[in-house]
Image (cartoon, rainbow, N blue to C red; front, side, top):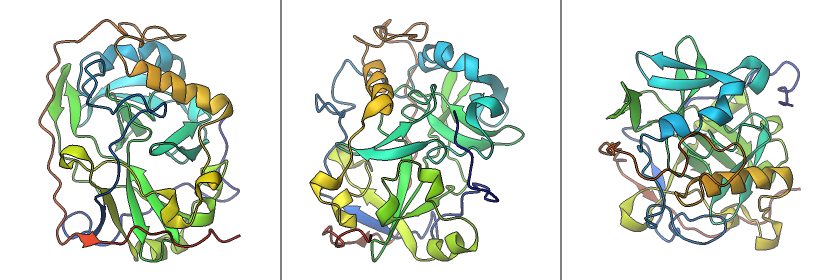
Length: 309
């Protein structure tokens, strides 16, 4: 069952760190590893068994899993989108905040409590769509979480926001898009980033606005120069033994999502979407949108000391 927000609290994400995007400072971590599966088998984008994000199968492969929990619409701005129903998502729904928590393997992994959460939190992008609210734009490449990150100088808070779409589906064609809207960040104290219910720990209201004023974007430079991955937990003082890995029922959803990323195994799991594992489609990958960050801020990657108790 979806978890409701704390009494009297609306999960309204705050704005981005000051100056985003044109003058945002970024914490660059050049030592961050390339993103790979939690199983450690191979890196996304390297194995030919994986999908391009803009593979047209994204439009069909997830329908069987998502149809019972929401509705599809052809939006004039965002093309084909899926919106979870209020009954399925709960009041005040926000992606990567509601009914779920963070774990960590090779990178941050969002572990959703929703029965449908294995799909839209590991594939595709989320956007605030006029008249529909938070809606999902299909994509076919796997990641532990499609988010962008923010940190402060003292490593006292971790911020995250759904990553903007790089393309939308117009007439069944992946069409490149640069979303000018600022990311909708939420902020969490470092001692609570692995809490079982993230939404009960994120800071909202005036306090969140004050925190946003001292945050800046975090960018990990991976192989090929693309920005991937979040800040390592050690940055916030977590020893390896303190960092939770996906476990329990949520781990099954993560495993299902990872399995769905491979052409050879996408159709092997329960309730696999129509067309899963059927091989490559004719969809062409659109050009990636460049998002240069002016005056990047290089920060030391050392731990911030033990998390406060």
